[in-house]
Length: 196
Image (tube, rainbow, N blue to C red):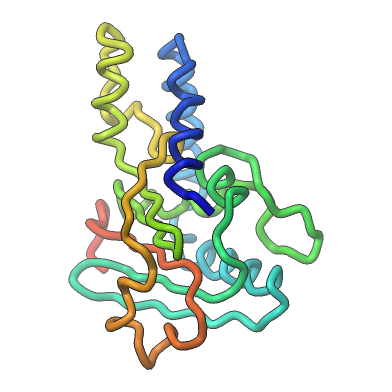
């Protein structure tokens, strides 16, 4: 899977937006999700891990490390794919249609915004991450007179890519979970409301 190309394709969708009020609408929906899903970060991440394992037909292994004001959540199961990227970057759309899966609304992962402004999803194909400040910089260029505040910029609608892969976490996870086939590592850093 070419994660960089998939992310660039996702970004192109936003390049076609000509009305800054659409950005505000997406931000308001994310704020609603944030308020509605307070306190559910671990529940939602565990639920996603369970679904990934079910889709692969295995029992899920999950590792949660809390260190240096970061939560590192790793799990086994179905590898991250293009459908997962789309589900991460869209609101209310899920790539899960099997009735045996727990998550299917396409919004649960967004519960992590309670704790971070820069979530990272590290896979074997690279890292998908979200950065409200970087997205705002792009919006300021596209809509120079819109006066969008950072708080009115959606977090999950515009992904970014870097080439960090999950095996870069080998030493940290060795002997804990990594040997069993980690497919996704979620890093939640710089908690905004509390200390982890």
